[in-house]
Image 1 (cartoon, rainbow, N blue to C red):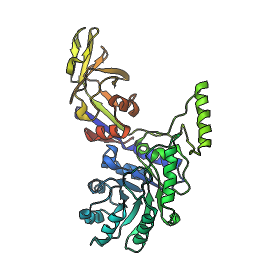
Image 2 (image 1 turned 45 degrees about the horizontal axis):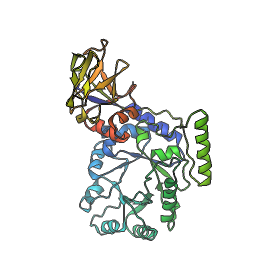
Image 3 (image 1 turned 135 degrees about the vertical axis):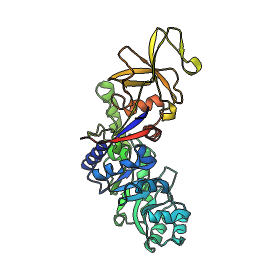
Image 4 (image 1 turned 90 degrees about the vertical axis):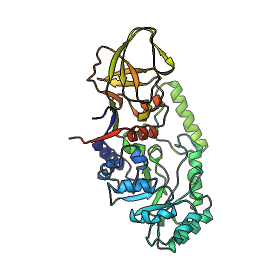
Length: 388
């Protein structure tokens, strides 16, 4: 086994999907987001999600779709970014569903000599200001053009810019989506999907939504907002939220969602040297750490080259169930940990997993949750396991 590696638990992925589909049966279709090499879990993990019940997936590009199809030939697959016209034949061969961001792109597609009949999803820009239509007359024209073509308007969707937790922008985007699609009969479009896992967990299903997209939650992370907790100050905060929610007609926020999700990815490494450092000696680049007393350190063959970020301040690792602090700056391929006499060369070191949650790891690195998984998963050897 390599020095530093990740373990992907396929049983946990399957379990998470089963739990989510059971928790949110009001959605007819749950679209599994597997862009970014399945959030760093690798496309080898796709079939665990499929076995859990996901029948529709989404990737970002044709290249990702090619990787996906090497592992799963039959699942429905949406490409979230517009496919370049010179790759439309590739998209047809991969049986991709295409996202349509504007009229110009749709008109190019309709003129393309490719004779494959695609399923299409219209992208609506309700306030994210990235991809999508911003004019309802153009939305209507696009739908009419598709109806008159060999293609099928299977879906329509938008992307929330915020999580909508005590947040008027979330509600403004929902209202804007409904306005931009007001010239269509949405009941005739099979898949209407507005948001991602956080929207699904933090808010009741909107009456027009028939599908939802799932990213982080599918990989084992309960990202629902937490309650304020007890105490007089927290009770006053909760009362304030209810007052403003009613006053400004804000969406209901669901807190403390109870669901059994199991993270599927963990990260391990080994010890390559144990050594003593005397009081007053320095460790690492810029001599940034000075030992206040005689200490023992473990040198690990892992650094920002492994996708963990260069910040060592506050970071800890787990060895035999105990947490040990990183000392000094993290290098490209090495970092140092202050340990005690209980640590030996044979001990496995956990950087992510066990007592070290994704949230902790994210704070250590100064990276977002998905960014952590992507960096860790794509920069290290992956080993796949299943529970017996």
